[in-house]
Structure formats: C-alpha cells, structure tokens
Figure: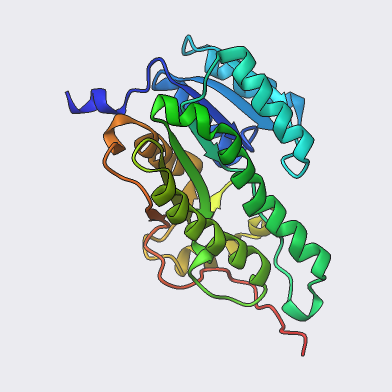
Length: 262
C-alpha cells in the first residue's frame, strides 16, 4: 500500500526547464507516476522529445516554448496550462543556473538577471498558479542548490540566488499553508548537460568525485525521485523544508580554483 502513496494519478504537473537534465527527469518521473504534464523550455525539439516519452506512459503532455525571464511568456505559459488542463496540481520550478564569476568581475546587471532567472521567475509562476494550487491542495517544488548553503569563490550570484530560493520556499510554505505545500531540493553536483562541459576532462570529474563523500556525482533521476516524493501523497505532511540531495557533501566539491580578482 505504501507504494500507492507515490502515485499522482489524475494530477497535472507543470515543470520549467523541462527539456533536459533534472527538469526532463522530473517531468518523466511524474508522468510515469500518473500525472499529465506541461513542460516549459526554450527549445521546441527537446520539448517534443520529452512529451513523446511521457505519452508512452499513457499521459497527456504538452510542451510550451518559454523563456522564464520574460514576464509575458510566463503569463502565456500559465494561460496555456490552465486552458489545456483546467487546473495545475504540481509546479516544479526547475529553470535556473548561472556561471561562476569572481565577485569583482560581476556586473550588477548580471547579478540582477541571475536573481530574475533563479528567484523572481519561480515566484511569479508560483503566485500566478496559487489560486488553482489552493483549490487542488497542490504542491510546489523549487529546485535549489547545495551552493545556497555551501561557500566557494565565484558563486556570489548563483549561491545568493539559491539561498533566496531556500528562504522564499519557507516563507511561501508558511503563508500558503495548509492548502499549498512548498518545498525545495538543494541539489548537489548532478550529471546534466549544464555540468557536462565542465567535467569533460576526466581528471576534473575525478576531483569532484573525490570531494564527494559518496564518491560520485548525482544522476538527474535521483533528484527527480525527490521531486516525486515531495509532489505526491507520500510527502503530504512535509512543507517549508529544503532537502539536501547531494551525495553527503558538507563542503564545495567544485574543483576549479577561482581567483578573487583583487
């Protein structure tokens, strides 16, 4: 019976950044567990691929080309989701990221854009979907990062944004309780297309593994499994929490020294 608690049959999930990596894995995990999905990303071809895979589980799936940095496109995404499905039960705010940059070289405009990408976009979608999530007693899962609580040179923009995501999660969970559950996942270094270019050198890959207690990097479907847990009835008594899914790391495993530029 306990496995039934991980089913999300009859639910509708919207996943941003869903064309690749953690977003793709999360969309397919939710579809396999019974949800219809709306996947948002910037490339139509990756959206088509994810939707085709989701439909193999017998689920409805649509892809909506979306740049979450654009308010008009976020509004259109929500309108399309509600128009096609009538409601949304699960929101996965996965789109995010920012390249490491020394603080003295970080332009203010770049910092502002990082905040809009990682924090504001997810907040806006959460706010726009709050009425339907309230009616359906739904769930929001924000994909954060271990760098929201760990420290290393070059991550002042990305880490600060993810720390903001973590506390935004706690604040929204308190304000929207008891009908909307809001949680976050502080993901560690995970093998995705975004990380790939940085670890093409096997020595760098090994350095990251050596700095990770579980001696390997994460897989996208391992983060997706936590997304499913937090979205499903299995996680029904959990809200306002940030879960560290990071191979046991207690310090940064980023292997590239970043000059401080001073």
